[in-house]
Amino acid sequence: MPQPPEDLGSHYVLEIDDTEVAYFSSCSGLQAEYETYSYSEGGLNSFVHQLKGRMRYGNLILTRGVTKNNTLLSWFQTPKERPQRGSVTIKMLDRRLAVVHTWAFSAAWAVKYMGPDLMANSHGMVVESLEIAHEGLIPGVS
Image 1 (cartoon, rainbow, N blue to C red):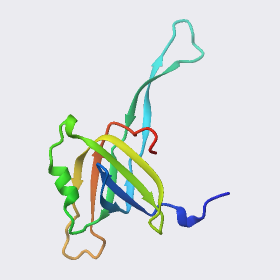
Image 2: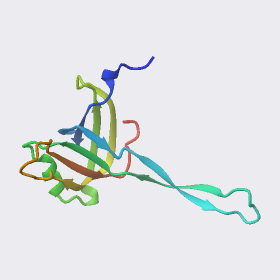
Image 3: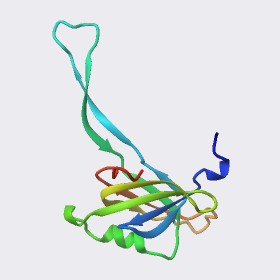
């Protein structure tokens, strides 16, 4: 039986090392793919073998309206060498703020912070975004 529309994700919460730090209105980059390699076998002209390579993950991009909280900017500005990188968790919430789905990522660190475009005559929403690199999904969480 299909789930009712109110269970669709409308908000996302970011946890850094099991501490809830921010809510977001959009999240992209939840992707994983295998590299593939073509191998042409000599004397076989009807197809080319496709071999599986390494797993690659996209960077996560989270966007929200600007707030007074500077936790994300501080996390971005803190240098993270490999042993210092912790985990991040993204929880998709429904309109009632109940958790619909959870994804966790290992060895995560902020690679890009984008503040708002500032214009004196702008009446649109002012947003900021954070881009996070990581080393993959944590098994058993998502």
